[in-house]
Image (tube, rainbow, N blue to C red):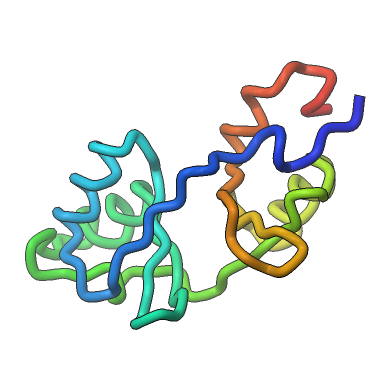
Amino acid sequence: MVRSVADAMTRQVVYLPEDTPLDEAAQAMRDQGIGDVVVTHGPTMAGIVTDRDIVVRAVAEHLSPTATTLGEIATRELIMVEQSATVEDAVRAMRTRGVRRLLVCDADRKVVGIVSLSDIALLPTSAAA
């Protein structure tokens, strides 16, 4: 059975301004039960930060979680996949780009969710193959 990205994605997308301190972003992730936030610059999406980014790019480098902002550690390249794409298409895009998450958009390129490798791994075995 071919599954679309819409079957696996997380529909909740949290946006935070690039000047948000890392500790506040981590608290938002905890409170929302998510592992990533989209970083904004005004009305524009400017990047993405994951819980892993906070650990590897900030904590491991001894950066202050109260003085370091999302903008300082964000991944600036935002990779999108349409919600109608297959799970296999999403996995291929992740492998090619070396990422673990993709923004999911509708046909009008409006963000409607995020899909991660862990989201795909939670699908029934036949859909993740």
